[in-house]
Length: 437
Image 1: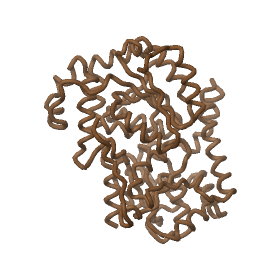
Image 2: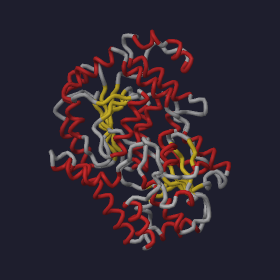
Image 3: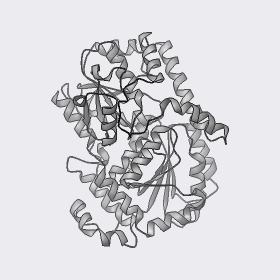
Image 4: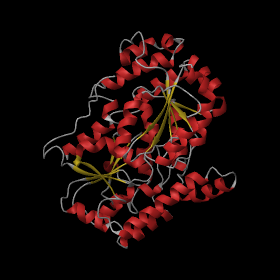
């Protein structure tokens, strides 16, 4: 594995370019902010809902929102009742159909409520703190952007979108008058923002900010190195490589003789832990192949100690001899660093279609676990549209369908589709825009 290219900027000119603001509600918004640390003040990400000194009233309000989301995500697994409750609440974040094209600028109930609480003082403390050194704000969640705009923040306000399509809540109540600028990860988001009447000059089609340590420099040397080795594992019978040899050579160059790692699946558990049962079904189905060292399995579970305990207890009697690895971190940054490192030697990513959907751009095919929420439904549609993923089959029979797809070269095709179709340089594009302002 090549060296990690991510080097933190040093000096007052390099690390004082913007406030980077996220929220620690699940992992999505923090994961989106993590690659932007190089341009963040003092290389620090601010969490709008848990920063040091946050007023108790603001913290409590944010916490109630987070607890509701996590409760619903876990409760959705309850037969009938869970789906009914989730369907009712998901209506408030529902993304409307794109066609017929029409003016969708009318604000929804959720957006009106957010602005009501902002007018009541929610977020004032955060924005006043940032105003003391009024650099541009880059936020991975819409609420801090609205807070800054309503309090007349004296510099640029940027919002990074972390899904392939978005509901009306992401754009301000009066989009045409808003100064908020958007970094769009794909054309679906760009076009959706236009339907919400966001001014075209306020939309930048940058791509999603993927981690530099998985890309390399502007020539994408690390990404190409990893994908070349991955293709060898994903196409054991050379079916895909025989048909698409000119495409592979033109995009990546000559493939090596042998991969630098064993065939590896990573199953990524979401922040609420709602997919843990699916993961264990897959592990139990594949345990013979794992034990016989035909496949390595990584369970990526974040920073929650209760999830780590759950999986360690579940797998301890399987005696899988180190070919099953539980990946966790002490802190969120520690976790992201380990995740990105392990992803370099991951051949297939099994996950719900969250912000990790964009990681298919690294040439990692995705097995899509069941969705949670309207935005994930659209992420799934986007992934299937570009051919970079497949919907999971029954995890109890993963030992059958996974190897059918592998031997047919299907995963290799998904890997190349993601690499060719998805913009990979979002982090560099965002840095360039901030640097040119």
